[in-house]
Length: 253
Image (cartoon, rainbow, N blue to C red; front, side, top):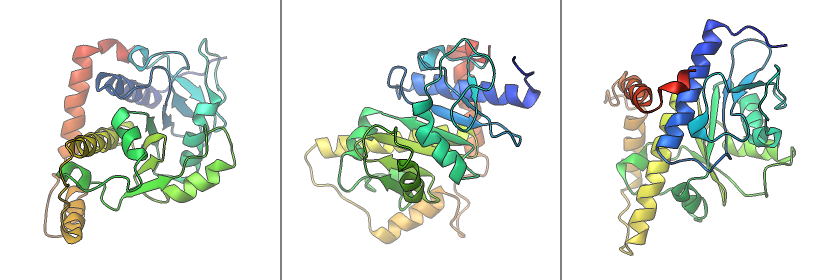
């Protein structure tokens, strides 16, 4: 039996479907693998996630599957769900009330930085947003072991992003939009780092105090600065929605 969809759930379905299409558009997918999960409001602890087997560019609001905290479908659905893919996500959702959305990728640049001992370096202004705000979790094999959840959550702490060593990237957000924007810039920071390293030239890293200042500025924490604009990310998200409406309007279906 399928329960009625509220207006709020429909809004969230469309927002999450838009994020799936954006991840596909910006080439951050790994075929049908990796996941983006979004918590639904209410005491039931229900979530939306991609149907297993669909490419991200095929996902629509109605095809998203509603699951419980164990990754099992709540309603009747013609789509398969990969419960194992929710192991990482469920751990983060349980531990962090602010983790409304959890986004995980296997991008080439993200995986390359995840294989580096020093992780993300402050090589560019874009990476400064994450200075001292990146968690790291050592690789323990394919994430199928429930015992790993406790260690992963401990390593994540209260950070907004995590580099899963020898694996990939993970971001959390109070909305699907925030999780996407964090992933977009985290992956771009990794791309810049890999490109800079590939040149073979010695890297110039700013003074740690400058990195700290830039991080506070970029995260709206500097008392002597109003950067970024309060509505900058809202403006960026609105622009991204216009992009999706142009290139993949069926995401709303």
